[in-house]
Length: 84
Image: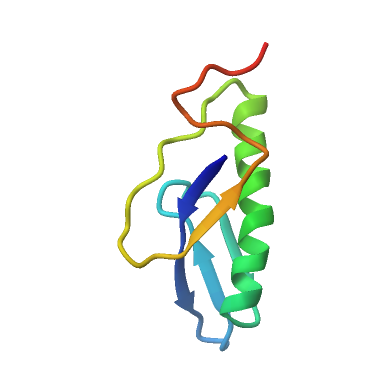
């Protein structure tokens, strides 16, 4: 299982953007915080899938006090070897 912290940022349009500091290419947006976090899991898994399909290991997760964490069980920890 992997878990990454996410930052929730309000947009000018009144929506909420979920940004992963460890995976800057993974960004999700929702109508509110709950919706943004729900969408963030899908975006996180898509991003990690892209990385691993290109032979890269997922980066280590930062420790950001108080930040919500998005978990996925589809990928292993960065320090574990990739399956052959």
